[in-house]
Image (tube, rainbow, N blue to C red; front, side):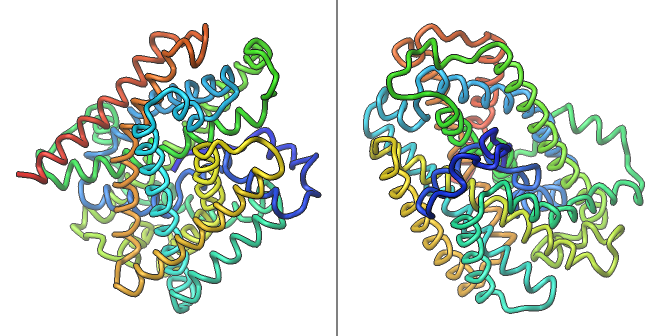
Length: 432
């Protein structure tokens, strides 16, 4: 899943950290996270599953999606900067209501399933680390996540929780203790390879869904709105100055590079270990074998730490971006009352996700399968969102004289066409 630390977070919410609890929800969604947040349990297990099942065949998705991911984030941010509105507000204003409602409903549904899969993974982390019961720890960790968001600024507790994600480096360590076919890695990183099957295109959509995540674009736009003047401000006063635009580009380039590189390393590690040994992933215990060459007997607890840490970091931006989308959908005006309503929506989404996660556990849905399904849902959602975003960026009544470089637009359309083609082929193969 993709996100980056906002400037507002880096300032530690200087002017809002002492506000009462209702204000916290308005600060959790936009543009939050780290490399660990970008690769939450859904990302870790989906990349591992792709590497175990198809080896290096899907590595190109992590590499070739990088330019398009950067371009899409820049467009989402600039649309918000010029209009002073988030993506959902712009879509509500400039598209037919039914189109807008479908797009938002798909986004909220995908985010809710994603959160449920992450919560199920947190419960599974307890079992991997100290053989604890799954269901009680789903509730306990979810409650801890809400409590942290309610009383502690995200940037403050993220600085502590991020150390749990150091276990992700175990995947990089695998590449130092196993023989890596670097030529094959380079080839598969740059040359797409296809297998004409429903399973392959389903996995392609899942990897795309966890790499090109729709919630990032909504988050980036909402962050930009909160960072800039809104009511009464002219378009000129909302436009970026050259220095700010340069910083935004640099930060986006670096964050996305680190995030995609982490996903690629997880996929390669699983390919070198599980795929090479013909060991499928049918449980989190099996997924832990991908880091066994470096972690040995501690592989399961190390994976548990990664799942727990990344989930706790990912839940606030996931729930927050969905809550902001809902707020924009209803057209709630800016202010303290809007923040209270966002808080209510966010808590409702978290509680709903807990209920879904518990149902997954009761019906024996493995976290690997749940994370794959949530990534697939994101992959099936991203194409419509990208189309609406690109069409929006070309509307003069939405963005005025804003100019987007033709190369940037081409990269965005390339990602849109790729996700649309994968979705079309997958659907066609399902029907045949």
